[in-house]
Image (cartoon, rainbow, N blue to C red; front, side, top):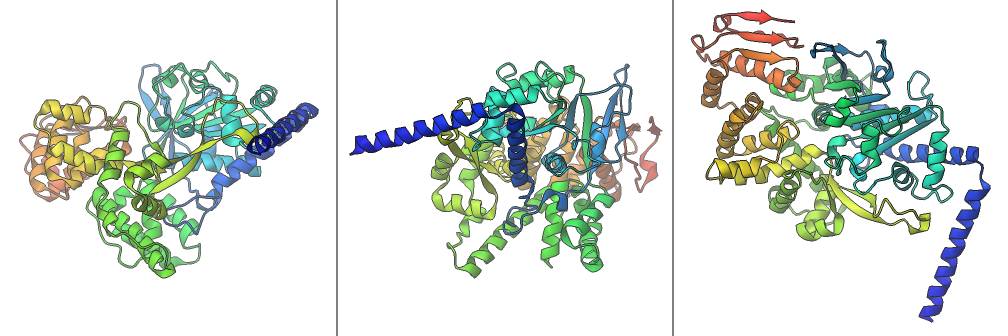
Amino acid sequence: MPGKKKAVRRKKHLTHKGTASASQSALTLAEKKCILLDSLKTAYKKQYDALQPIPYIKDRLYCVDKVFVEGGIEHVLESQSGNSQKERLSSYKDIFTDSSSRLYNRRIVKGEAGYGKSTLTLQLAYDWCNGVFDSPVSAADVLILLKLRQLGNVRSIYKAIKVILLPSEFRLNSKDIKDILQRCTTVKIILDGFDEYPNREKSNRSDIWRIIKSKLFETFDVTLTTRFIPIDFKRSSPKRLELIGFDDTARDQYIRKAITGKNNINAADKIKRGLQENPILDDICQVPLFFVTFAHMTHERDDFRKFKSVTDFFVYMLKCFHSHTRNKASDNNVDSYYVEYEVNHVELDKVAFEGLNRENQQITWNKKQLRQRLGKQFYDLYIRVGILVEEEIPEDSNRETSSGDIKTNTEVRFYHKIFCEWYASFRLAIVTANANNAFELEQILGKMDPFDLQYVFRFACGLSRSAASKIIEYMKKKKDCDKFAILCILEQNGDIEEIRKTVKELCSNSVIINRDDIKLLQRSTVQLLQIASSHDVSIIEDMHSLLLFDSSLSCSIDEPSYIHQFYDSR
């Protein structure tokens, strides 16, 4: 009998494959294109209809068009002399508009962690699916949006499209997709999250890298989002754009659009007062991810307090996440809430740290293996809270099969990479505090780029004073990282003696706020000087000059006698 059942199953499988094959051969290319477009729009709708502004709001999913707000975007213009200038765009739609004589078909959108790169790509997908008339993507024959974190095993872009975006569409195979794309007039491709691409160090092994190097899809319009610019993309001279965060106008628009509604003035004013009363929080909330979290939580709570640092903000935010889940568990009589897991997350800390402290970062984990390592109760809780998120990934993206044979693995990732950095920082603080010498410190910190993983270092400094002193000294000695130490110092909740010492060191030569500095670093340099001024740190004898190179910032310090010269070289 078992053999007979197996034979029946195989016969059904062969019949299915035969039906699929016959169906494919009977379709015209035009019909296959219609199937592709419908399938892509269905796939994108599932993504852009399911936004969660904060992890625990699982019962209220938002369409991207209901929450998307335009943050600042700048076009970075390179001159022949090697200098760069920045031109503010009036809309995200201008990303695809080339006002200069040069026409681009390669674009790179750079943004720091939490600046809304993925949300922007989903808005573009929404525009294409719904034919938004004034959107530059609406007229494209085909829009391909792929999240690079899902493509670790992919070599063929056509198979990636098939398996990631059309997993259940048996009428099309990768060859059909290739034929369709080659015959389209306009194709726009968006590759989201190069910094999360598992194969970003293997530059010759996939179609993704061939696209980046303009050796594939030379005539297609390709946009890449990333925290940093890959060297090979620099060589292809793409149009460079930078997301610069939320200003007051964008924040006000988000509050009225996504939270309070246009007519609820009192509720909107409450959220804005929370920002205005806390300068540190006001600065933090220029990062869209932090502002969105703050705005939704403030709207739902009456006890939102002031913060002194990003670390302070995150400590409170995670308490709110757990509190919400605990209350919900109590109300609905679901699984008991394991309170100790709020503060005891040592194994998760190790997982996050091990993932980031390597040349080729790991940001997703196999569900079965991770659940076994963390323990079922802990794992299930963090999934419920929303800090960990499950995602179905094809088991083998290079294997061409019928839909019935596609197998997936459940991979697990953090809600956002900043959350991964948060838990990794607990482990970093411990091992750094225990380091005995410079060699051990280099072994711990040497594989983590502070400009890629700034929050790991900043959180660790906020969590542990002993770790902070070692990290700050390490940063001061590391090439191009001396000013980054400022961000770490400000996490220590106003240690005036440490600030006094660092300001004197900082001002022993010219203080330079450069256009190439990240916005957060520009603001933090000014903030540090303002703190020094307010605490009457005497630095007259050490201060030479303050240089402001084409920065968007203005600098106003309470005691002008502290500055001998001020050069504005814009």
